[in-house]
Length: 216
Image (cartoon, rainbow, N blue to C red):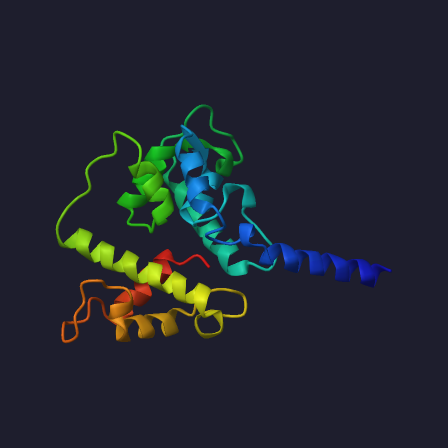
């Protein structure tokens, strides 16, 4: 009886881990970002989940998603280290549970940008749609950032379309395989590329961009 109960629990955990709403970039993530962009404050946990392209209702831990769980924990600890420095608490700060501390939502995104963290496009777009957003910088920095985002977007499509080739059994991206493929086929993600042009990004630069941006 105990073995059957354990087997049922393990099966339920596997199904929960495989559920799209519990992975990065869940269905309707853009709508989730728009919903949360309208809120004045987020908890540190909500910040970490949104910056890792997760539904804040997922929670910080899901069995069977160790890679994503570790990324969420890293992000949460980084944000906690900013409290009282670049990220100011709103209201009374919990004494023992920093993860439940509330911060200004827009300030959290600005802090992430200042630290050059990868911000999901849907989350960035949700704030860009609101008035008062400062004008974006110009120049090579912006163009390089656009290239990195384009490569990451293409990688996400490849993972979804050809998971056997570009994803591990647990659903996480094969960074090396993706970066080599994208470096060899820039026409798939760089709209201005023409045969004979220099490669928009080398494989190692693409790999760094994918590690920063992919949450699959």
